[in-house]
Length: 133
Image 1 (cartoon, rainbow, N blue to C red):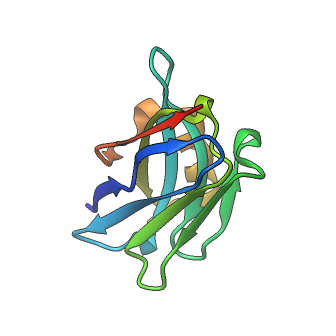
Image 2 (cartoon, rainbow, N blue to C red):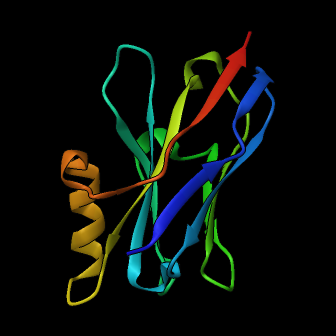
């Protein structure tokens, strides 16, 4: 299985931007669906945005439209989350997660990841994003 390493968080002023990275080791993301989640203090972990490694298809939740962008590099070993116009309510620990798409419908796989994060087996360690007002 692929291992995930999330990085790029930090302290940012409101209105600023960050680019978070999710790096793969042990495999590439070619046969995976990848979703970025975030968990604010005292709240449940929620999916924000996802991408299919094989073809780069992107999946946005309503909360991600407009300020969040997901992308994958040509080597299929890094997925980025670009966040612009950061707001204090974006403060959270951000996690990347992955599920294999081998012998699975990728669209169904990624949809299940959003609906049932508790069932995901592959997680990065999380990176803290703090937005000051």
